[in-house]
Amino acid sequence: MIKEKRASQAALATDIHAMLQDTERGTLLAEGGTGIGKSFAYLIPSLIREDKRIVIATAKKTLQDQLFTKDVPYVCDSIGSKKRYVIYKGKSNYACWLLASEVHDALDKKHYLEFINDARVWEQPADIKDWKGGRPTWWPKVDISNCIMGKNCPHILQCKPQPQQSNIVITNHHLLAIDLKLGPGFLLGDYNMLIVDEGHQAPEAFRAAYTHRITSKGLDGLRAMVVNDENLRALIDDSGAVSSKIFVAQVKALIAQYNTYHKEIGPYTNAVGQVDIVQGRKQIFKLAGTAREMNRQLEGIYKATQNMLQHSSSSYSEDYNAVETFSRDQLRSLTRKIKRVVSRVGSIMEFISRLHDSEHVGRTGNYLLTRQPEGVKIEPIQVGPLVRKALRRAQHKVIVSATLAMGKDFSHTEESYGLTPVEPDD
Image (cartoon, rainbow, N blue to C red; front, top):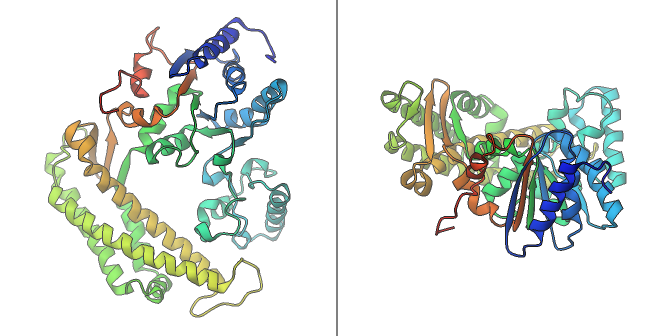
């Protein structure tokens, strides 16, 4: 069962097994050098427990793939476990089944269609790791982040993994962080055991999930997409949600309000760019009002484009006719652009929401606002208090890495995961 007998590996497995006997709660922090066999040490005692739905999170994709293709299957076979396991990576790893038109080279397109067809046959996502050769330059145009059908896509259950349907989910730190932020089981489904490998790197992923920015470059891109694209403005008019003239005016107002805010907080910025969060509140309220109204209108625009796409065809076959104002390719391209506009406005709303979060900003002062020439950023000072409550839903937690302690002191890791003494309101 264990490929090599190593004292530290066996000791770790024994400690995890002992912790799992506790029907209440347990957390084990374990430090062990590279190559001692930490993955088998945590897999064996965990997988023999039929009552555990397990999430395993890693920093590196190579370890994720190793767990999915080698270690987890080996342990399951060895102990006779029938647990279902899935690997769950970011959207950029999976190809959309409907975007062959984005591949313009004839030979590449032929290989892409074969690649997608293999995925259909095996009823599994088209993962870039299975592509023969290096990552193509056109891949960012065909990954599933470009899907324009959303929940209406007929292949939504096949083009990406469905982690909620498996007993073991192998994911990465960033997706774990997003799941913790969005709420219990939002992405990964409910689980009662969490294993974090390469655990010293996870707190930075937690921090990234709670960090929000507004940048001049992003706003310039928003202006260029809306103001300079005549076809996009025509699509906005056709949607019936708002006139393009009004929407363009709101984009310009949003940018002007941000520029005023950026200028107003300048005098309150210290030598390293930090600003008192309460500064510029009046302008932020104006910015928030404009962003909320734009977001409401974008919901209507996007819904209308979805209806146009469905009216055009229930699938992206190569032979359906153009409808109304736009050709098939124009409609698809414009819908992707609308998605990018939605994303840009959404990021502004997240920044404002975090700025207004009185629970964390006003009461605990756990956020830091930084102003730089290229934009503004709000980020947490400590991530432990932000993830503590969400992490508590996992009855048992194992956090392992080659470097978790400073000397023999694990207190820094405990604080980063919110494992310090629980506050009354937790």
